[in-house]
Image 1 (cartoon, rainbow, N blue to C red):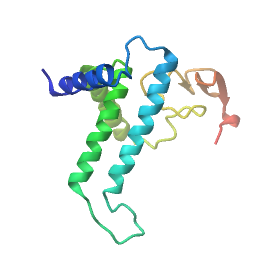
Image 2: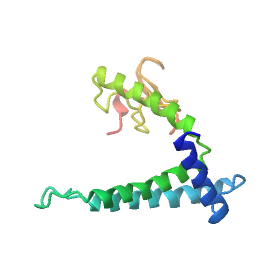
Image 3: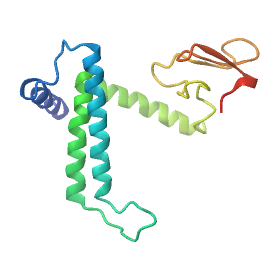
Image 4: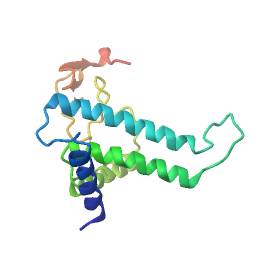
Length: 162
């Protein structure tokens, strides 16, 4: 068995059978509460990892407590896996989506990505991201800069939100 699959299986066992916080039949409301809790926990663990480094440019400390840092990354990994599990994301899903995103990121860099011009003016999501259904100028009507599917709004050249 693949190592990532083995970790996901063990994490599912911990969440579903031991803690009883992950149920395949949970409601959307319960899933959102689960996601909220685990995203916040993941962020907290990443802050704890950051605290194991001398990251402050205004301070003279230049340290990395490598063992403690690695421990915090493992803690963060637990919460990341929980998020994968609630989304029914498999190891294969992660791999495929990672490879797809790598291709997108490499193409963006080759094309001179500026982080602004290729994003929807409404929701600020990149047109080339998976599941973004917004459309840029040229694919809509004359005088229209973009269609934002998130806000269900046309943006004209003179209405570009800053």
